[in-house]
Image (tube, rainbow, N blue to C red):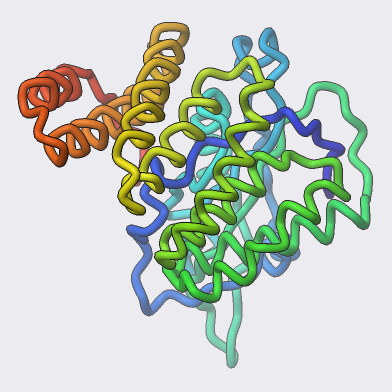
Length: 296
């Protein structure tokens, strides 16, 4: 089941959810999202946050889960999604139940990626263009989750074109492709992708979205040696995330994101010799209250 999704929906930055630090045991068998969907026997619908409704925030939350050999969800971790939607999605998913996954006659503990959609009145429908995008994004996300960055670069590269055909968020597609390029140390292609992301998000009324794009461009410029350009984008990233944090202080992810940006900017300032300013940013980052996510 897929939803018609507006291009302007926003997903939480992958890097802030520590995608590269998998919490799953290496011995656990990974199954596809489609296989998990076929085995689900109980779904609990998430509670749509009132603030998200008022802000007309739609989209989906992608969650990595571990399903026990009894079919229970024993671990869940957010991979991507809007900050206002992540917590209700995770609360719902932890109550999902599955038929045990059987391999060679034995029930196995498995890991999978599931999607929790949030929609304000859209009618579920099959869309071949979105299905193509969805399948490719799943492949991209899985390879990123496995830290197979060279393969992920190839899989994620086609996402912007597929997103345009599917009328889905091109900012999300450029974000993912840029992340894959960056992790594969292909900084030039990462910069191009994230500059596209920035151009798109400037049209959104989403401080966190634009802030992440500035941050992405900044760290890529820093990696290529353009420290002045990186400094300018770090400053704008801090400004946007401070605004997001001010507007929704109850969203833990905004505090985490702001701290990440502050510390990264401080690192750049130390690199160019501005030790005093760097220290102030580090102190500011340390003063932020970071509320823990309810991960198991």
